Length: 277
Length: 309
Image 1 (cartoon, rainbow over the protein chains, first blue to last red):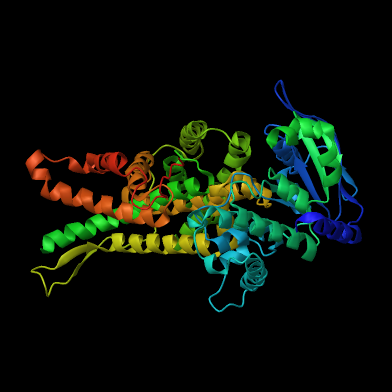
Image 2: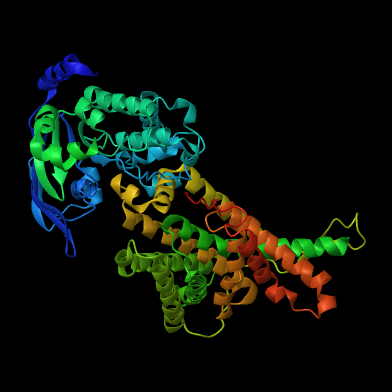
């Protein structure tokens, strides 16, 4: 996927799949006490796009993701998703609307198996209530059991897709880091999200693990048509897999455009690329 | 030998009841990371409610039937416990999301005293009795093996069976249902659980409801043994060492811990008591818990404490 021809192919493919604006972030400002984490940030994400947010440490990338995810409530600005505008969202609402996320520092349910972790992602899709689950009968007729089986089928497809079949029963705490990251992705995918927010999906990985993860992200984007917003530090990866890139520095937006544009932007070079390499 | 086994069985029966109370602590800790000091108060509150409703319902309806009175008492007390769970979440926990463990602990301490007082205001402060018709007569078993056989209390036997059934049900619920899985998810990571759409508030209400039912069953059994009185709340404090021993996050740990402490108390009282002048039963459990805190702070079955370097 390296080199000029790879880039051209990706851009050609992108032109075919990318649709209208799905998620629109307008004039977001967020501060904690006197500390300004984000100042007047605006950008849009189009349907089926891979959108990267980059910037040096402390630039406000994770804060931005947490605003979209409803963890933080920005003091100013609004977020429009599928034509509906929100000033305040909470995490659960966001999940219900079809936005899933993974975490920078793994936030898996450590005591549970990989399978159970991914199954939790189906929580919103389960319709039978607590009572139905309490009255499960041993013969497998009850609706709760049928439903559990149907959900399990879906989850098995995700497990196949992420190639973690041999680890499904392992408690995630015991898995190597790269695999834990995949389980984290699997849990988000189990929600069948329209938008997937990835917070440094490749942090701490070796080259091979990064290649695997890049492939999974592109496959998700391609096969499921999922729109992807990702934060990533590895410039090579960002340039390879994203359609458009937003650059933040000290909570302000200093660049926005195709990987090529961003790479050529002098502000970005001095703020980030110039010092990083 | 017969006497030893008798003591052992006696210890196991008491241990089963400790487990029942310990289970309440473990459930809430597992699902919300809160050490619920109010569990003891909830046991007393539930027992009071059941005792009084079982007394009032026949007066209200004019039906004098013990089974009817007890079932009605149990159901109404259950409703009271559900209401308590809802109120605790709505009025206290919801406002303390993401606070330090110590803050939550102190909040539950406050809840404990409030519930203690509320129980006496609503239901009176005398000693009441719960009569669920447990047979009081002891039975003798194995009298072919030992002279005179072994004396077992039928009441204890039934109580232990009820406790065992409840524990089995709860384990299945936690391990095999979607809601159980959601409960474990919330216990592990609040933020991640929210991000996949698990409603924290509802999960907390469910878990306090379950803990309320456990408290009700414990209160019913202890109450029918000892009478419903203020000391029931302190019985719960005896379950504290059980939780330390078994591990705060382990349902099987609560059971095994309870059994170990029940048996240990009885055996040490009988066999060591004469040498040190008795009274071991009172402090044995706490000393054992201290030893565990020193050498194995996560308990027998608790999650390993892993430090990241």
